[in-house]
Amino acid sequence: LEQFVNAAEVFPAAILIADSRGRILLINRQTEIMFGFSRQELVDQSVEILIPEAHRAAHVQHRENYNHAPRTRLMGTELDLVGRRKDGSIFPIEVSLSPFETSSGRFVIAMVHDISARKHAEEQRRRSEERRRSFIEHAAVAIYRCDVSGHFLDANPAMGAMLGYSVDELLQKDITLDVFQEPRRRAEMLRVMEAQGRVEGVQCVWKRKDGRLLTVRLNGRCVRNEEGQITSLEMMAEDVTQRLAIEEQLD
Image 1 (cartoon, rainbow, N blue to C red):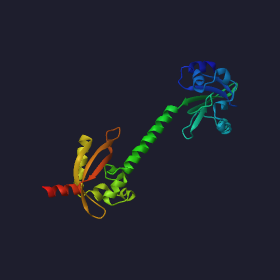
Image 2: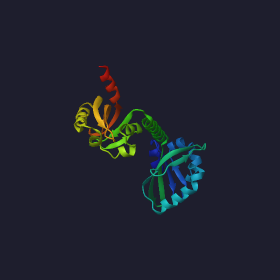
Image 3: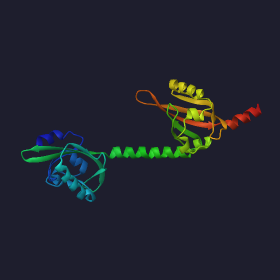
Image 4: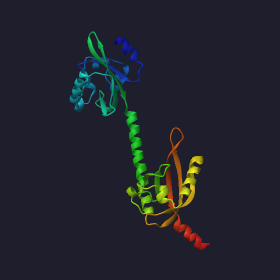
């Protein structure tokens, strides 16, 4: 066991070896760094010392369940696991467990990763997506997303209002058949996007739910997968019907 832990000193993860009762037998240096305890403070202690008090009773039950069916497994993919440092601070962790049998009984190797940075990045992405979503929802300009075939994937209220649909109604429509007055215009736009990756100022005629026609100016880009295939189009639409009418009167 000691030879294994000596080899594990270079691992970036905390590694602990415990017996079936959860008593810590050996740890590596990263365990000291991660949790703030010295080896002397952890060896012979229960692994529950590294778990917040509120979770200790449940962890004891999880440990007993694991002993009944030990196997190599990754913990924390479905549950949010947390560790407790010596100073009482709590941080998110991911744990891999591996049992092994010896003449002295069964032992469990626990590899612990501090995933604070990952969780922070996930939270930042979540907040960024919320801000982006809020911006789109409240934008005065019509914004929509659709696939290549023409099925709506998303649309904001301004897009629905422009066409006289609720957002839920719009998501049931096909933009090529139900919105474009001339489907060939969308086909032309797709060819440009295939070649250039985006379009700017494309003018076309759309039809509203009530049948009234309006002229729109489209700007957008295509989203591709790893193989380079277009998976969706992210578009903005501006109703320029009245502007064009005024320009014609002034000419």
